[in-house]
Image (cartoon, rainbow, N blue to C red; front, side):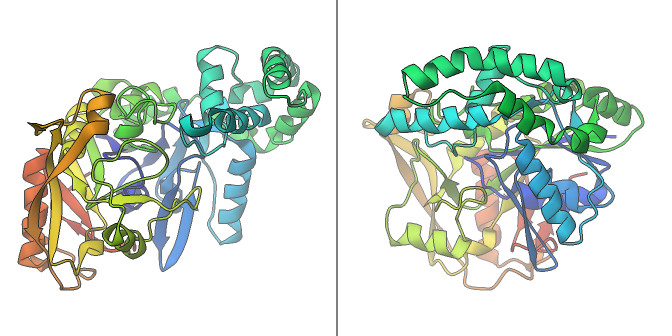
Length: 427
């Protein structure tokens, strides 16, 4: 039975939560494998909107067991708040199970994130200030805190003390901030120990055993390909690997166990934060896309930058991640446009290119080359088969499929769980 990875093919906010939720009834496990609460997945069920920042989007499907993998960094306060929030709304939260090797976001990580962004000024990355980058830095520097450390109070205190020795020097001498007390931090973290202890597991063994037992495991990505620390628009990226390969390192499941990679792509393009964005619209068209699509960050509330569909952006993501399928979201938002531009290449300093630029200067200089496709006026929110879509809408989807070199197997035609057109089975 398959291991399935769901990844974002643009700069995030493509609607991965909706896709995961739509597939949730057909899978046995939903596993979050990267990022932290700098990501938000929005799911609409029965007219109710649910926003998850750390909990896998599959938490709303009773048939699926949810797992937070070792590649995720966890803010314990946020996790507790999310579980309480779902419980108060009548959701029976019996998990997620949490990898013992997942790293913990401590209060000092958030402090460092905020002061370094302010210090950077115009060179800031545009982080959410939630401590994600500093937590991953500690992980790589081998001074991080892991979920298993909550099970040993003395060990946890020793690790917090060691981590703060250098950080306090930086905070006081460079940023003119007060020292952070190790005893207080340890106390703040341990107050959650009893609550999360039953959830902490050897996630790698759990998931491999599940695959051995022919269970269907869906690996849920956060952020997207072009925010990947290795493959994204560096340095305007996240601090982890949301690409398909991150599903393996972020859970402990080998690459031979992945059968399908589903790339999620919005029918236009959005981005939050700083960084290059060739098709960005700084005009009334961009404002209309933002308003019609409700393009405001699920985590930060920041208005998203909006632009037309950029085919080379999705094509390279499909190639690098080995996508077998694309799930196209928010196609309904484009209803009413007489013509819809699609970026098919770039003019880079007078030279035409059909492929995504290799270097940062090339990407900064890239000017989109558009192909105009006819739009449609019909309401498509009730469509449930490809044949239900207007002819020009079908042509738009088929042209995108040609440009990105990967089949489009599912289409989102509205925010609801049921507002999906399935062309090919994804499980």
